[in-house]
Length: 123
Ligand SMILES: [Zn+2]
Image 1 (cartoon, protein in one colour):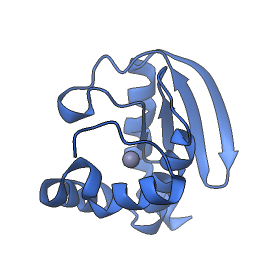
Image 2 (cartoon, protein in one colour):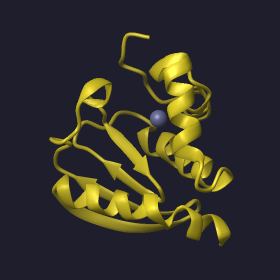
Image 3 (tube, helix red, strand yellow):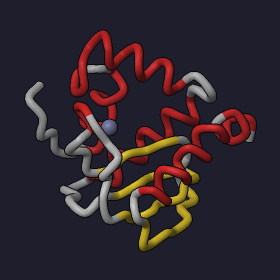
Image 4 (cartoon, helix red, strand yellow):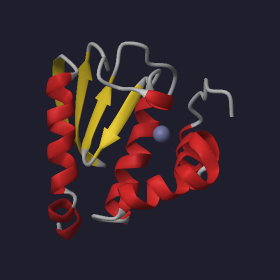
């Protein structure tokens, strides 16, 4: 419950991001607690995230049009990471990203390994 409140700012950013991404379907998932929103396009995304198939912001999971096997399971692991590190997860993630890159940082490594989802990037 505390985690839910602490992560509320990110969840709100997630909702705004969903609105910008042209949402067309939404459902509530209980475990892990999240809103899974299918969207048409991540047109506002730039940099290394440009080809993202899905993303998690707070308890909002956005699924784009180019999903591959186990992408939803991958995003659920990020929801659990938000639950595990309330409020500070994005900071920890960003630090890990700078230190170890988009695939080898410990949060993505956990998500890819546990979900057995597909990494398309270069490293
Ligand atoms: Zn990920």
